[in-house]
Image 1 (cartoon, rainbow, N blue to C red):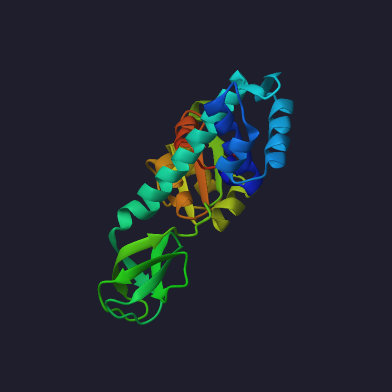
Image 2: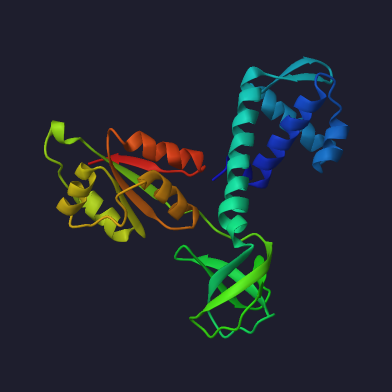
Length: 257
């Protein structure tokens, strides 16, 4: 998850640092308080915290400057927020300007529906109680496909967990399986393999991959839709997988077989 979106305090800290960077070196705490929507006392506490963390340095009374460490932190957080925003608008909502969904109950054309993702697929149910809504463009019975347009709001979606298992290339010996891989693959929604050795390791663990190409991109797309993913990759290809996950702003764990 994006650090500055984890909680209100992290988001406020980010905004205070942005305001300092925008106004430095003469910093009026009252103006920052008005811009951020907190008290001047709260701004003072945040500034002390930023100074203690080395993100801001105090030059004189009411004069502060963002340090190089602070600039780097701002760039990192801003990049993470942008990637997350791009994912939401382009991947989650961008392709849904007029899309198909599975109806969970009987729906009539013109009816407002609530939208949610289940098993990586868009679903619609009657009513407008969801954080994301749309308007049905077709009639549908429960279980059928319904057309949806007029999207509003953001679908409440928690990214899935991703575990990357690394397997040595064949030149280092024949790939072996493991109990940990077998357990993880059995519990995952999607299993992807990068490399022949990765497929062999899965088969040695009594598992079969769902995907044997573009493993990193598939893992990022699936996890972004809330699915738990296991990727098995040779050490030669693992970097490509993790690069795709990082580019998508997704957290992951790496284990060796």
